[in-house]
Image (cartoon, rainbow, N blue to C red; front, side):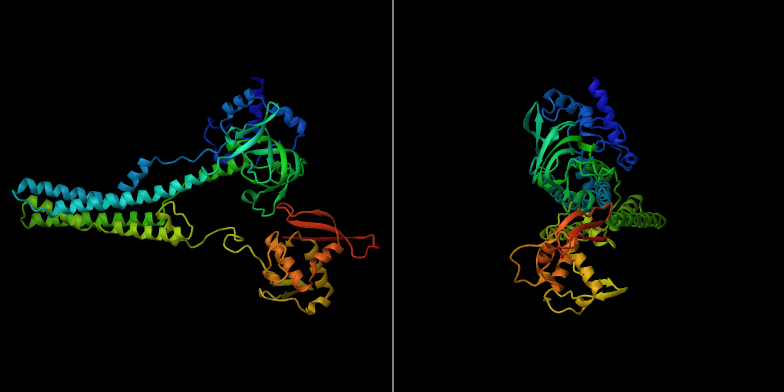
Length: 507
């Protein structure tokens, strides 16, 4: 019980509130607060002592079982889903479909009244009621089928590759399901693996992770056992759940699982947002209110007029129902459903999966889309278009088929210093076997902005690789989202000069 009480204190400090699969409902305000955790700050020995684990032996099976029962599986809590029968009923009885059902019921009532009053009643109302019922049922089933099919495709994506992890249990490596990992597990991660939980890195060999989904940094981030920042998102000794290892290998201890991970907090924030009605749903609701008001007003008005003119009350009631039904646009629901479905199918051919038919119209009525531009709305390619030096802005050559040639700026010492910095304070490189392609069409390994600087330098100076060899890199501070700059120190071309060259670029 001592282990449980000690560790519960750790869990509360990590999350800011007591929480687990069986815990209380997540407080969104708590999730919005800055991460309050010290697992990356304390020494490795203190952390292992707190988690009561030996890095060589790992947890025992009993310990792992106890913690799994206490904290729940290492998975994100799925957002609340609507039961399938509720979805079906929503498609069948909400919005415009409800108005058509009312029209159909009124038709059957009118036919029933006529059947009781006449030996051979006209069957117009019966036929109209049947047609309205068929229209509503067919369009409702069609809409439900379209949405259910998209939902099944999305669910199948999640189940394509069940995630596994290598955990040290009782001194031996075991292949366990990622959901079975618990806080304190010692795990091995290698190139290509998806991180199964938030881990504190204990040992690392050229270990790099892709944090782009979490922090937006497109460059792989180095991870070591060294504590480098108070901010857990910036320190190098923590790797996060759902990011990918793109290079090297590492051994780490699990410090957060499931909803308590950084990604889990983000997922809970996203799932806690309320969803409003789509524009087309609002328009249809508004239209239904208008049509209903007009139909009822006209029906009651003519019912009163029929009484005043001396019609029999039964005829007046039939007249009332007929006018109300006549104002219901029976074909509108089928028309809207078919149009949205055809558009959804055209989008599917372009690899865009529509989960909800109404979303098609929402996309069409969107005036502003906020998106990560580079690589999403563009080709993830950048080109140097302007330079600023000597207090002046200078335009550059941006045509893709531009070739190397004489540049009158080359004699300007300011330009030469600027380009030297662009060549040296740069981690991008050209891929091999592209010597016959124009410089601006060559593919690069590296960030889009650094690739643009590399191409500009190669186009206007040439032999960037030779310049880098003549100015060997001695030390470097890579770009990160906190500093927003990159700095490197190089030897000078004059080997007899003991001085070093410092170059720096930033946002």
